[in-house]
Image 1: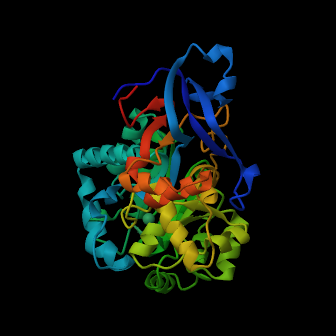
Image 2 (image 1 turned 180 degrees about the vertical axis):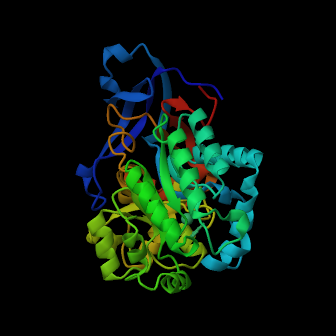
Amino acid sequence: MTASPLSQVLKGRLLTFSDRPRSVDDTESYAYWAHGALAIQGGKIVWRGDAAKLPQVYQTWQVMDHRDHLILPGFIDTHTHFPQMGVIGSYGAQLLDWLETYTYKQEARFEDTLYCQTVANAFLDELINNGVTTAAVYATSHPGSAHALFEAAHARDMRMIAGKVLMDRGAPDAVCDTPQRAYDESKYLIDAWHNEGRLSYAITPRFAITSSPAQLELMQALAAENTGCYVQTHLSENQFEIDETLRLYPAAKDYTGVYEDYGLLGPRSLLGHCIHLSDRELGALKNSDSIAVFCPSSNLFLGSGLFDYSGMIEADIRVGFGTDVGAGTSYSMLATAADAYKICQLKGYSLNPFESYFGLTLGNARALSLEGKIGTLEVGTEADLCVLNSHATSAMRTRMESVNSLAEELFVLQTLGDDRSIAETYVGGRARKTSAI
Ligand code: GUN
Ligand code: ZN
């Protein structure tokens, strides 16, 4: 892989968002340059606009011309599990059976350091293949798994959020820790990796079923001691999961109440799924400024239910989009947007293409409180980018013959596109997908 020069100009069609598009006609919410240029220095964007107006000072820099391709901020995935690469597409089960039959067995393999390193590297390669430059990632309960992911992300200078999974019951011993080990190992990883380069730590209790009250109590202390860290967990994905949670936490008002009781909600709390929530629970998410993460391909695959995206937006609850690999069936955020569209259709809402690309970029940056760092093409932000080719396959070329607008093109890209539509991925200004430069 060839490193890109530190100072360079990229040319192509630029698209960046400033707010959530309310419709395809909401031209105020995005900026588009049909013949754009982006100047990058030291990993940051220093200029962007119409190529014809590129200031003299950048005109001597090396140029990479992406021509008709679209240059967008790198995609962001707000919920994924790197150790589940080996279980994607495992047949015939809903959540709790799927975890027992396939997932815990696979995660047990992460006791082996070499295996952790191999899969962590394969996972980050897959993200880059798919134009994903930042993700919020679950490791396994083995501290070495989180360590391997951080090490591999650091070597690529990727902005990554991750944490060791915390689970002390309800699963095989090979994937369980104890409350004290969960605390000590998380603390060790926070000290080693949180705010190291572009990395952040996420305190990661798997879900209420696999954490005892004693473990959640210690996680509450850990989160209070490390307020800059994220918290990520699963919430209200499946009815059997909800019933089991309420059996294990009989004093809680409801499932959300469990996390509330242990101080785990807040503006840096990423709650995967949030499908079957009551009005009280939605109110608790809103009041705590927590983030509901929509994982459409996973929800369809496990038959978990239909996330109420438009209801969440109307209730002013922060929303992120995630793949949830490996219950999720694709690493591609384009495929994720395609499945989100279908779920929204079943809920009576047509997610417009500008809104979905906003969601994959600035929307997800906001969900991670990273606006101003990533998610746009604004000057001063980090040059994490993806370059999209809407003619990548013969099916796309045929379909593109009848496309007449940018909105239609974006929609074709999300409906028919996959990793083949990602012509390049830039991480901190460096081309990482191809060695074309
Ligand atoms: N709930 C608890 N663990 C998991 C997991 O690994 N994947 C999904 N989709 N839901 C979970
Ligand atoms: Zn998940």
